[in-house]
Image (cartoon, rainbow, N blue to C red; front, side):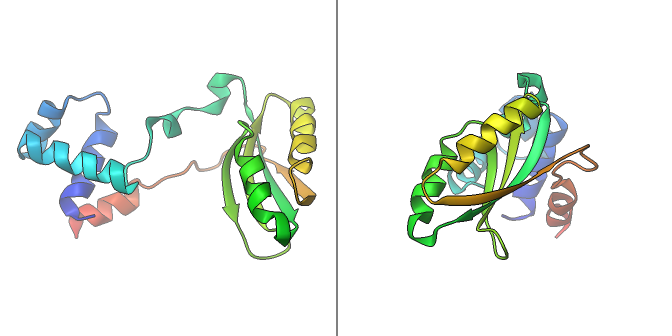
Length: 153
């Protein structure tokens, strides 16, 4: 990603509903240049899907929790596959330390989280979990400062 790509991302962040023509004019580049760069960023995964911007609370899932999962190494791939199939699992990372996976999950309430915990434990190879409930989001995921730095470089 170069500085022009970063400037394109910042312009999209400022005006997500702007047309390609309007963004190209704002940036002083050709429409085709903008279109090809956006397409490349989508294909490489630099520009992710729009659904990442949706607040799960708007879908009735206002409770956020982080679940650490210890997994049998011989069934790790099966566990990850099964856990990916659970809609409430919205993010998952392989980790070092006491647990093998760290997941961000959403639920409707604590009863729903309890149900979800049972579903997680039924995944092949899942041996134990540890759950921490988020009381408030002190800082949401932010990337703008990194993109601004890339735009200056």
